[in-house]
Image (cartoon, rainbow, N blue to C red; front, side, top):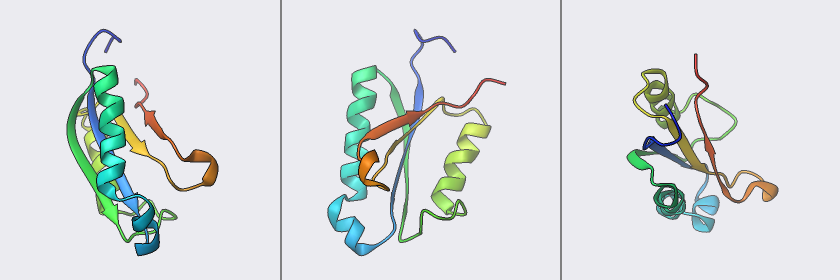
Length: 99
C-alpha cells in the first residue's frame, strides 16, 4: 500500500475501571481517533472497545478482534487513544509491518 491510497482503519478504545471511564469515555476516545482519521483522509472500518478489562492482559475480546482484522489484512492501521500513562495522553497510530 502506498501513502497515496486511502487507508482502512480500526479504532480501538479501552477503559479498565469506572474511575478511568469518568476521565475519558470510549465515545470520547473514538471521537479523538476519528478526528485523526478525518485529517489524514483515512476510512474508519470499525470501532472496537474493551471496558472493565485490565490493560495488563492482551487477552481481551476487543483487542483479539483488532489483531484478527490486522492478520486478515482487512485493515491497514490501528488507531488508539492511549490514556494508560500520564506521558502518553494523546492519540497515536500503529501500522502493521509489511511481510
